[in-house]
Length: 384
Image (cartoon, rainbow, N blue to C red):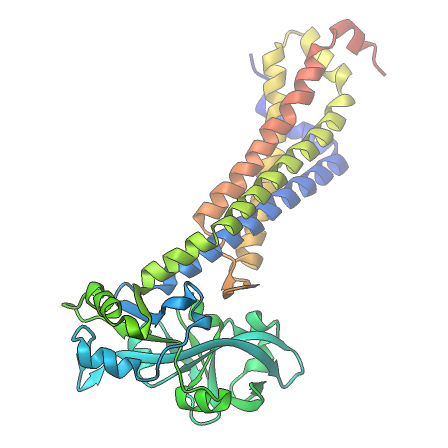
């Protein structure tokens, strides 16, 4: 026969201070799990939505995966459009975007700032980068820029310093912010965009970093790749944008593995903390446990009641952490080497966080409960 369900609930209420401390400890551990898993999910989501399977990137073969180090001829876009018929062409406009992309020191008018990512583009960029949408202001003119919604996080600045009408400085020049854009969580959201010609003259560069082509329905990325191989004098390589960001997923795989290792360490630390708390909670109840055995309750029934208390505390701690994570952590911008992304507390993060919490409740309660049940009933009844 099992002990009544209310027995375990009442036991938690009889020791309010100890119960509250245990609840806070469990909630803190689960919150750390939410933060780390949210980081992993946010990084994966940002890389997953950045690529467009209809877009092909053409850049220098010597730059490998680092497009910032790429340098190709300014005539590359015209060579591609003249030699290939794979890009979308509407109303006489070919959907090909020549771009100059580099990392540089950016300063705001509030005196803060950091290393930013700047992309020089033309009016054809929105035709190719189809996820980019202006959410405020207008397209940049001479000496103007538009900023992604995560640029402030990338620079370590406040959102107020990057409002429309404010100024930023990079490459020794002042730039006015003419607008802000979003890209559905893509990597572009941590970038600063300006006019290509303006950026080239400021940096005293006439080359490009890459060319992005939007393939027509009948176009093939293989044709672009074949052209790059045949024109080996240009030292170009072509890759689908989705494949490029998939390679970045592999590049950041050690970071993700390290993050999962941190989840395991935090969970292990939580289990030991739970053991310590539960040992303290059970140690003063030897007489109670012995009395329950003396009046006829089996050891497995008492064990189930003690585990029930641990699970109830763990479930409450997980619920508390889940609510805080969803309302306060979800969507927080995080600065990273590739730019910035947002923490993502999705269904996977909730499942893992709450699963770890319930595991702490079960594993933390079992050893001290088993130890208390092994003691002799007569000896425990005499305990003070």
